[in-house]
Length: 311
Length: 247
Image (cartoon, rainbow over all chains, first blue to last red):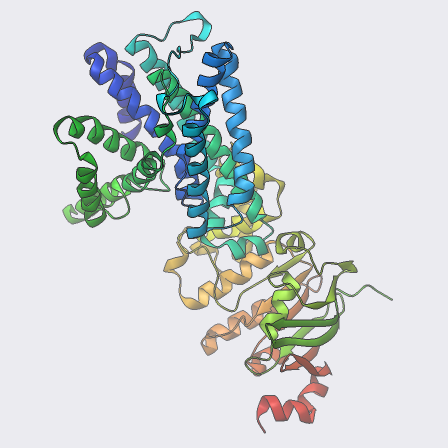
């Protein structure tokens, strides 16, 4: 039953350009990109118990590296993509060493500080980033000579990448390493006494999470063909975190649902009211009151309860 | 002369100005069973925490099977054969019993860094976990969540996690605390069944249950070793009567 539903859902996603207009295809691409950001952040927040408020740093950094290499240095899109992934992963290696000296609120503050430094650099280092004007004239990747300039073409490519990201993150979460990560979240002292290197486990997760955020950053810059310092802003980090928590942190489906909710709200509500953040606030409030554990686990609980009552 | 399982030399631990461990030296031979006695605040758990590496001593040295471990982190010491249980139950409450034991098994397994294969597919992990649960009589509850267990069962699971690692040195911190008389007997028999290849150091308040399990006793008082020796000798010693039995 679940397998049938899954197959139908995947088929519906693949066939989306056949029945949806360009606006909806692009909306779907945006949701997928936000979902990859949220899924990668969920590794830290949900599975690792490490709440980061600086995840946009990796998304934005990867996007900037790609944009800078292709527009300012004239390097090919393929090489630029690999370089962006490598540079961002290296950045996560270094950030992780410092940020993971703390946990809890201090960890949150350090990640926030890091992302703010990058955000400031993006504004001020005009010779590299064009400052507030942002970098434009970016072209999309053309894998194996296939142009991704059409909405449908880009959507399919993004769907493929998101699917791989989902599988890779799901495998990670269900692996022995994923089990030790959750163990470290719940009882770090016990895990250390059992022979687990708590610090190393957190650091590897931080780097892995940074890598997938970099992948999302590449999708982001390819979609927009433009990058502005706001990509690195605290608002973007907070949106990603909100998506994870609203959808259900520590679950595989939660971040996807949360990312979809926020992207849709942003796109629709901002057309009618200027302060869409306020609406987001109300929606978030409703989630916390009705399904405090997040949309996906919350709905599962409510459905299970209804099933019990029927018996 | 054989290498002792645990060799502590002149260990000192101060919290600010407060000394919690004062020049403690003790030697536990391989295969020995040792009881550490002492009133509340005598520094028993603080001593344990220094042996496992949770706390770093102010000065002094700790050797484990002849190896200097004084500054090694807890995870490295676990790989040298130390396992412990906690006075306050420290388990993975939202996971099944089997999963709890698997985390213990993974701790010493190279598979713990395997990131792309499902945990369920790791060979023999589940069988080993079941065997460890069987050792403490919890094999029927393998799929239950820890949070559903009774307190006594949690205590036994604590011990199962340690035993699953087949440690060379096992530290039990009040394994019978808060148990009913019946449960005490169960845990007592369980500890008695631990093979002699595992050196055992135990903190326990309940002397009636604990004394018969051990060879030697160390009495701590205000962070110092007051008396040490064979159990009969320590029980008979006037200092023991004074500080511990309150006679």
